[in-house]
Amino acid sequence: MLKYTIKRIILIPFMLLVIALLIFLFLSLSKADAITQMLPTQYTPEDYYNLQHELGLDKPVVVQYLNWVWGIISKGDFGMSYKTRGPVWTEIGYRIPTTLKFAIVTTICTLLIGVPLGVLCAVKQYTLVDDITNVICKIVGSIPGFWLALVLLLTFSLKLKWLPTYGLTSFKHWILPVVTSVLPGSAYYMRQVRSSMLDCIRKDYVRTARSKGATERTVIYRDALRNALLPMITITGSVFALQMGGSVVIENVFALPGVGSKIVEAINSKDIPMIMASSMMLAIICCLMMLIIDLSYALVDPRIKATFVSAKRSKKTDKEKEKEAA
Amino acid sequence: MANVSAAANTPTKAKKVKKNSQGAEVWSRLKNRKLAMIALAGILLVCFIALISDIVYPYQKWAIEQVASNKLLQPFKDGSHWLGCDHLGRDMAARIFHGSRVALLIGVGSTLISLFIGSVLACICALYGGLADMIIMRIMDILSSVPGIIISLAICSGLGNGIWQLMTAITISGVSYHTRMIRSYSLSVAQMEYVESSTALGGTPTHIMFKHLFPNIISIIIIQCAGNVSGNILQVATLSFIGLGIKPPRPEWGSMLNEGLTYMMRSPFMVWVPGIALVFTSLMINTFGDCLRDAFDPQLKGKA
Image (cartoon, rainbow over all chains, first blue to last red; front, side, top):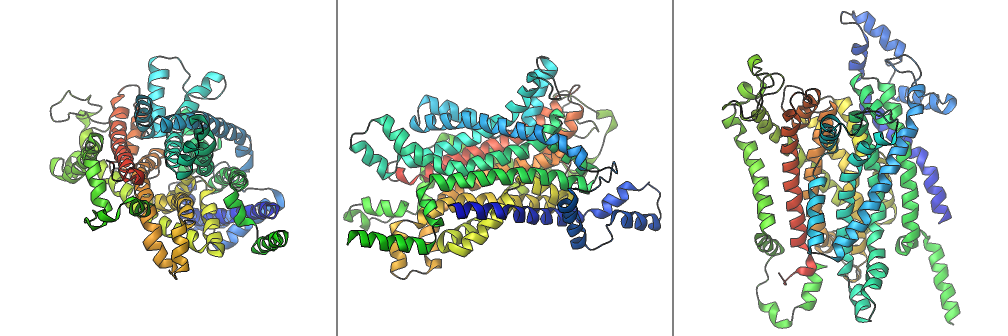
């Protein structure tokens, strides 16, 4: 297990490098647009080549990428913004806590709403509670986050004037963005918990537990829920990633000072170093989260855990068992 | 699981009765659910709208041409523009109709491609395990360690705006999710006794994959497919809303919402109309997917 953990931790920088390469390759396809956008409307080819040289975009993509990586490793320098011509880091650094806080708060709220509702609906399948929750979840789950944000803004901020429209300065400011992100997320999570729970409730071991006289409560919480929540651990990771991705849109609509709104701004101004740096920030946060989730998955499920134990060791234990038996 | 439990529970006499295919049984169960039929009708309605949009509203004249006198025309005021007109005087109904084409095309197309890739990869993972599993899952880890929308953003801003670019972006960002999900199910199937016995009897991985793995996870694939189409339609709209997506004059629900954002105070219908079209479509697809799930539920087989 320890070996697996260390392996995974060592893998993370490599994973990030591959993601960075992927994003870098795609973004470099649009470098011509980026250069023309920085030049005045009337420009000569000479201006174009000068600027290209100045930005270092005339070198091969791989060299650019290696330079970029080396800059980060040696100096912690994420490059210069094309737009402000200042270091990218000064504009992103202070935005990270907002995005991180936002993603964690929304993920926790999602779990708090999703798990109990999902279990409740599965246990009371085809009853009124299940039907009503299902209908609400279906409707909420079909609403895109940004439209929900627009509708909530329209009703609560512009019509009723209860809540502020943008910014993140007080508790009131948090309500609309969090509600907007949590509603679709928890509807999704609830559906997953429900279906996973339903699968488990119909399993043979649950029937066995019932026939052995276990109370309904024990059957649900000890046998069904535990097994049903296993696949949910992986989904928690995707919910977190979903919230991080959703923050791109939500931050944009509510004008929150986070990394997500910076990405959109940078994309619209074709500011490649800024796009790189801010998407890598989100990638790093998600990578660390995935690591935690994968480890806990392995820790909780003994079947998965067993696959990490190397073949040699399992043979040994078999032999030991044989010896013990003898 | 379905075939095995059904076979085990069926008395020997019943084996002589001609067995209905799973598809026919699912369909007969679906027919009995009103909700499923309503949802199916809704989906067909959207498809129908997409099909007839060219006949009812000729593209160039209604969806693209700007009429200055119709700027921000409110809905239900003018007989020929029953959903009103946007800030450039283009008919909203025509743009909604033509927008459905883009939504359906990208939604269904990218789902099918990414699900196919995902399920094949997942089966390989579950059957071969070891190195193949390790390599595929690390690649998927790499892809899914970034929120899908970031990869889509990078691809879209690199490739530029357009339908194929959007489709590529959404397909790539979807593959990792499908692979992870389907793998977790096929892992549990691959550990079943019948797979073990098939291996013991000399079944090749390909044989196991098509005879045992696919039939048992097909319901999960189909259910995911339904949920994913609507998810992808929403993602297309999201990307267009941000400003990456379809090239501007072409109508798309997300970019229509983006335009609506600017005129939200004066004419809220520009936010309501495309949004409701979007929610209706995705709601119908999701509902149908849910009904499909119930219809596929193997433990209910024979009872309904």
